[in-house]
Amino acid sequence: MKIIITKDYEEMSKEAFKIVKDVISSNSEAVLGLATGSTPLGLYQNMIKDHKENGTSYKKIKTVNLDEYAGLDYSSDQSYVYFMRHNLFDHIDIDLANTNIEDGKAADRIKECERYTKLLDILKQDIQVLGIGSNGHIAFNEPGTPFGSDTHIVDLTESTIKDNSRLFERIEDVPRQAFTMGLKNIMHAKKILILANGKNKANAVYGLVKGEVSEACPASVLQLHPDCTLVCDIEAAELIK
Ligand code: F6R
Figure 1 (cartoon, protein in one colour):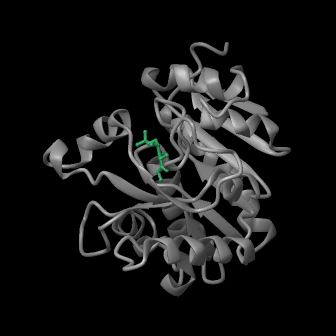
Figure 2: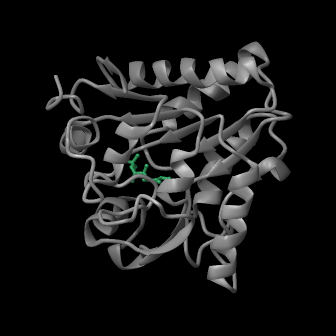
């Protein structure tokens, strides 16, 4: 795994942007695997700035997102589809028809997982952007998720519900289930870019880089990926220096 340690969040976001920009520059039809959450917001701001200042075009770019809360769709501003439009897609020239995310409101959740897995087999990510949960989760693959998993429904752990409750009015409002790309679907990306910042991610970053490769720490599977880069700030890197 390649590791880049930066002095702060701003520098982490700039380094991440350079890596994503390289992929887009070498292939104007690239498939970008994207994440929600606080961590990639700075990366998305850099992408928007670059689009506006340098005209980098996303017209032929396709995207696949990691996950979505079960029961939420664009009509809820807590949904991940809303997050992506609000924080990235509405500010670049991407065709929304080329953006993909699980349908949180799908009537048949099992069928929806199958549909998304089939789609991912066709839209293999040229790069997959990831954040990491404080318990080592990637996407919503919580500790104990099999490395061979495809898109599936998860019951969120108390720790993830607590982490994510900051974005909701009340902790009771956080959905208890979500759709997520499986670890197998993440690992088939050609390139992986995982980002982490802040002290509360230091343990998870240790598990990602130096821990035993074990389903107890889902992110540790990335040690087996042939082209994975971690960009993290000095606080998140505290235990791997
Ligand atoms: C988001 C996702 C999650 C987050 C992780 C970190 O699509 O799949 O795994 O990447 O929970 O979240 P933040 O960045 O908010 O700390």
